[in-house]
Amino acid sequence: MTHPFEIELETSLPASPEQVWEAIATGPGIDAWFMGRNQVDGHAGGIAAMDTGGHRQEALITAYEPGKRFATRTPPAEDGRFMAFEYLIEGRDAGSTVLRIVHSGLLGDDWQDEYDALRRGWPFHLGTLRQYLAHFPGRTAVPVFAAVPTGPRPAQDVRAALALGLSLPTPVALGARAHAEPAGLPPLDGEVVWADDERFEIRTADAIYTFHHGPGIVLTFHHLFGADTDGAEAAWQQWLAELLG
Image 1: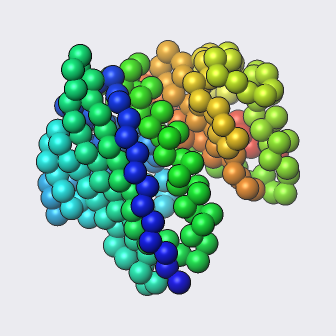
Image 2: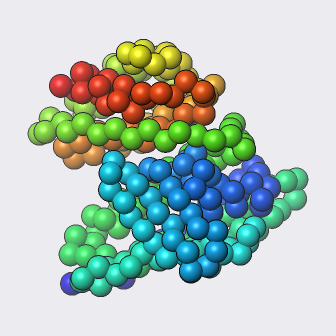
């Protein structure tokens, strides 16, 4: 049985409408703050695609009005499930922009858990978008995805292991300083800019690092703006495996 849902959010961003449009309606822009590797056909009727860990998801672009409105809709599954996204952009004084997002569709039998996860995740993603526009405007990111299973290990133990690996105090708090040295990569030195019960995010001089710990798995969604990114995905996968193995 399917269940309809709708999530509406609004946020003010420190960027022009043109900068916000580039961030939410182009592949390189989405790569800099959301999940996976993204491609966007620049017209209504085109395809917006996201690849995360080898899983590709496509959606039809249903509205494409540069600087104003961008909308997509996934094809319906066999049981009718689908997701639709609408982004509405409005310029304000002093070079700021209000972005309104409407995420709607139909969810399946586990709709309550999925809805709760979506509702919790959106404020975080908008926080990452704000970090990108405030600190890395116009720069291109290399998205880095890694995933390691944690089995039945309690969530608090997984979080503590991640905090230890990043030289963070527990509980992890905003403003805390992080440090890690993944083999084969430059050291990570930065500040915690988001922390909740499921994830924390660290901003450095040339990257935004996200560590998400869900039931039975740890995921990373990093955005690297520096030039030295060769082998980054394999290196972070190895770092997680060694830390949580």
